[in-house]
Length: 172
Image (cartoon, rainbow, N blue to C red; front, top):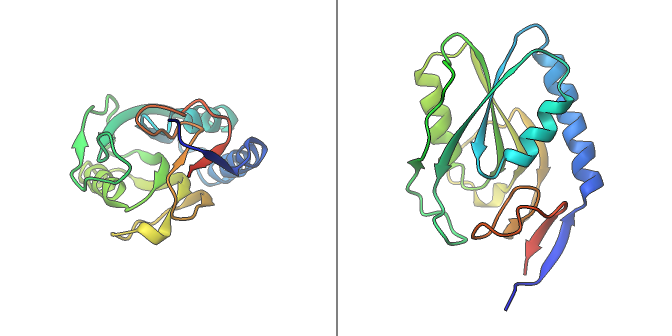
């Protein structure tokens, strides 16, 4: 039996938030040629839409991290499933995430980035779920705050399903 999905954030609202975030990033990083690092797999749709709207020179890279496995709860054990291809040292780095939940995975990756001596490191997240936060994570650029429900759509999955939904939905 398939779970029931309820729309939480409509595609036009997502589009407006992505445009707003792109404007803020373009303003703050003008002339800096930032390196945007997308956390796969969840950020790929958000990052693609964001990058197309950025009005500046930039580079992109991706890394795969995992803390979920096949469930709806973070395991708390972070695995790096891919490595960066671009050097970070001396670069202005923007980490692009789909959701900040407990903060464990993101905090782990930001510490990893900072060990490689970037000129600066910032976090751009489509969504955050502050009610679940276990570690403090500073989000410099945020699309939406969501309730403590499991969400899917716009790249965010449940067991590799629902990434293709144009809206962000709650699984009921």
